[in-house]
Image (cartoon, rainbow, N blue to C red; front, top):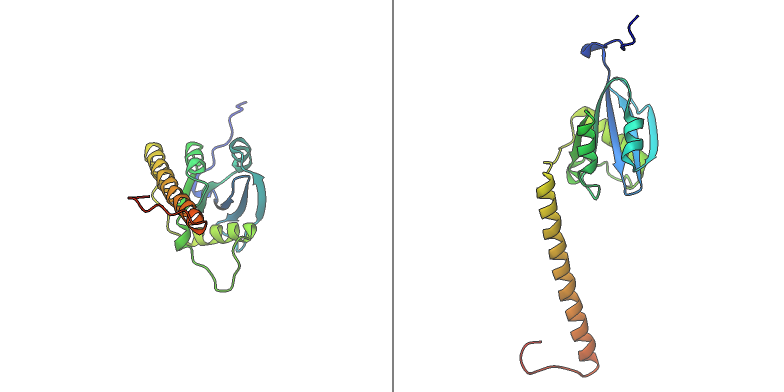
Length: 171
């Protein structure tokens, strides 16, 4: 008697779409089977990759997506490494209904899953680890330069209001 699991034909496997609203401490996941009209599950998990890997293991072909905001590409790389399909979505190109308030994790996750299944979302290009590091360093440098200039202007205005004005050359 064999202890090997039965192989499910690819055609018989169900397509499952996951919309994920990712934050620093948590991930809200909407599970939308290919034939369902609404998500069958809405779960909030800690943002912990081993726990997510254990939670995500299920029957069917998984297609996941999340918004490209502060989460970076670590989650994308992990899902791809685990053998799942994952897209990172451009937030500015997500269709929004007028009058709907943002920042509702469960609704955002459900909308992502529904729009992803419908093919209405635009994925971003995923940077390599090296490119991502260079981009982050460049952004950090630009931010520091802006902050230095703001601080310098603040100090000069502070001194000027107290009658200390330097007039001999550059500040």
